[in-house]
Length: 239
Image 1: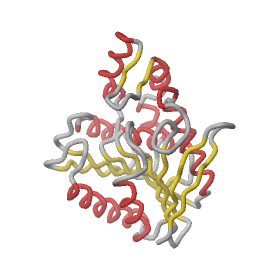
Image 2: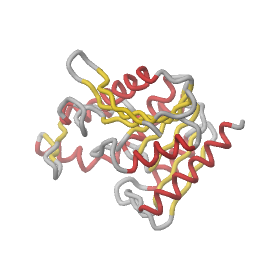
Image 3: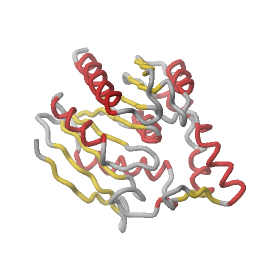
Image 4: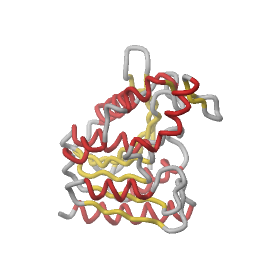
């Protein structure tokens, strides 16, 4: 398996960093990482598993994260959608699966209805209801910003933009199959949000609630999720 890393421009002076895993086809598996995460760690093994399943794959850092340009405080959901669009434009797939973890799941859900090349959406513990960020919102309301342990922060701009993206818009527009995998013991994003999202979507949805897993999956939970997801994608491809 060969990989290479690219700087992909999004604006005239800012780029994201993307690692491409070269696979045997022009069907792609595109990964969107979580809010305070980056393209490393479990995203590498997910992309490797995608190549084994016959896809090419790409994982990338949103601006303000990892090796990408930009300050975290300046990035909104709209910016993350623009980052994803730039990556997809660069790899130019015939078709692709969107995978998103946590807030990356929200990015994937809102991006999918805008591109008819998306063949499926897979989300692990996705943010669907914006109330998941109410604690951060309250900190911004009281202090003008919410600062995280690593020093990164968000301000009112993030929430002004977030409120433009209710999940109802996704539910009304998304037509491709969806798989959601969510830990039953998730302490950050309630399992009930994924149950509600499943009920709201008008397409085929697999919801798997995983016992003993929180917002971050264990190594074994991650392995089981990968196998379940790619078994499901194999069924989707055979339709």
